[in-house]
Length: 205
Ligand code: AMP
Image (tube, rainbow, N blue to C red; front, side):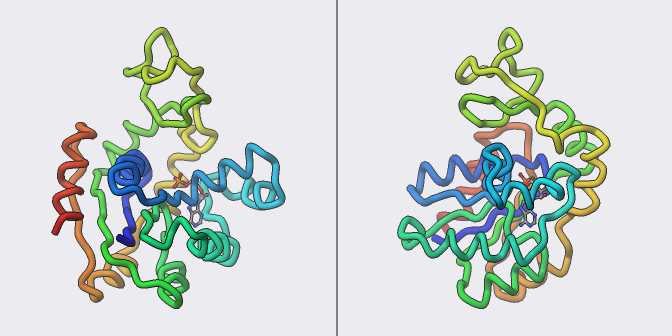
């Protein structure tokens, strides 16, 4: 299964991609995660990406397209994968389409008001690397593993506003996949399990 999850920032697409990846035993390819890893580890890619990621701008297509093409050529992708956060615009979708046809594209819908609320409350765990939320912490630590948490640089309010503008999913991108007959969407709820049920129903079609 070659799957793309689309969703505005804070829609929970990363969390859902992780659940699907485990259930179907296919790798989750999250461009945001790859960029953050490279930034933290101060690689050459990280140094290039940092100037965009930390201010909420998209990393240039040329860099991102090449990164994903290299990743998808790896052995573990041959039975399928979940793309999370790529393609994010029509030019990335066209670049991908030159060498790969996707099976399904699912959009997770969320209102702008809800996005801002979720991102302002989001924290990341330094240990298990999973997102969590202020309300879920136990004694200020990750409720899943007890790890220390931090605020992503791009979850700060001034950067959230930029991300909402630059990262919005265009109608052009959606129409690109609609015309291929592989586009589906769900409305996100607050319940992670419920969202997974909605997605899984589409995956099983
Ligand atoms: P995310 O975790 O998906 O919200 O991505 C975090 C940041 O990584 C984005 O705000 C961009 O700066 C960068 N990024 C992730 N995916 C892409 C992409 N497909 N194209 C360009 N930049 C990206």
